[in-house]
Length: 323
Image 1 (cartoon, rainbow, N blue to C red):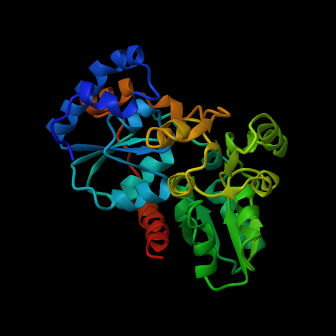
Image 2 (cartoon, one colour):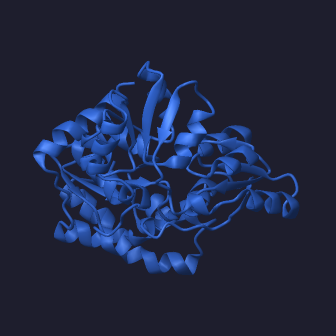
Image 3 (cartoon, rainbow, N blue to C red):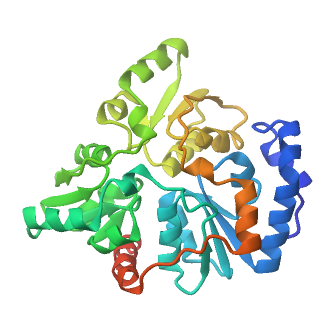
């Protein structure tokens, strides 16, 4: 995985989305990170929302939350650097308790994770006794520990229906719950958490895109409001959207999600025109080549989880992965 490779040779991968002059400014950090990975037996896991110089330049494993959770279990390295947000690093630590897990910036958070606490779940259990709690992976380890099972945007319906019950508490993303509710007969009780990136998209945006870019294919993330998902041509997780582009090869496409996703998918599809409504995640953008390098040089910042919380949280994540 950490085979000998140079920053200069990596540029061919990203030449369509990163100007040469900009790449020259990245080269020193890329070379240093490649060397540090070899010396420390480290791997970098990068979410689809990372910028191309990270996603295509230094990452060993890339994907959406579900893919990173699954692949984290297969990692043989001593050190995992999570190029993403804090809940993802916690999930990697839950699944690799004996490994060192680093996140380059502790302030890389998530509006969904911030929207709910274990105390909120305790109150919901009192209000809805006996109703199982399905919690989105975009939450803290403590919230996962208070839940019955986790889900991602890619497997939410499957997880909900696996429980075999008529009613489920689905937390904390209100829009994801409402979008899944349209696809299942299970009654979903939602929380009022929202992703600060996806909640910005509107049905009017889609209308304007179709007017200004005739023939465009619109793909929406299920964290978008339900009227946005309904107005789109297709909805799915970041991995599912990427697969759609690979399979269908639309002439012109827009991905209603964090805008670095379009850059990363475009690298593999020079024949597809990507229209970018650039909504940035400020938390994902806290991760840079510079702080990835510092994380490996200084062992910064190591993710730890209270053992009592970890046992219950790991159970919720592993129950999801077993489906």
